[in-house]
Structures are given as structure tokens and as C-alpha cells.
Image (tube, rainbow, N blue to C red):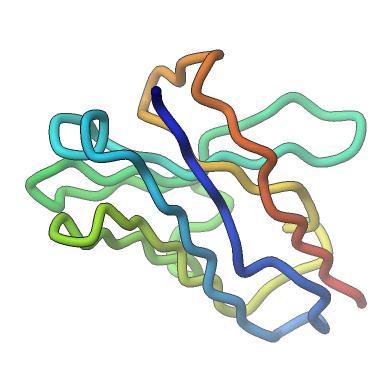
Length: 116
């Protein structure tokens, strides 16, 4: 059974930083590109960053230069370091395989709120 558990969200002032973590079950983690997605109120879920098993990364234009995705293959973990946060980064953040997420892999996500 696949399980993805996100953590690390919180409330932060604009310009601040947060580091999100995602714990993934071994089967999907070892063979897949992993990504971080977010969904803001009233908006569709979007892919913000993804990283291949070989550590190749890709970012949405809206977060390029501010966010950094990484993974630890030995620990089945994927991380999202978020710097210079803006109010428009406020959303629930999820991890999943990427760039095409699986509906049955969505976890509960972690809330990130950036105050102005």
C-alpha cells in the first residue's frame, strides 16, 4: 500500500522560509520521479517542483530561484526548501509521483500560510 506523509508546514511571514518533508513508501520512491504540488483556495492543484531518482530537478516559473527540491533515496524522503516566501505561496502542499500524479497516492498535505 502506497503512503505519502507530508509535514513541515506552518505560518510564516513574507520573506521567511520553511522546509517541507515527505515520507514515501519504498516501492514508489525507489523507481519514481517525485514532486511537490500545491493547491491554493479556489485554484487547481499545480506542480511546483519535481526531482528524478537521479536528482535532476525542475521548477515552476513561479518558484524558480526561491524553492529547492531534494531527496534522500536511502531514507525514502523528499524535501522542499522554500525561501523568500510570498503570500501567493499560501496553499496546501502535497507530494506525489511526477509529473503525472496518481489520484490514489494523495495524502493529507501540509498547510503553508504566508502572511504579508
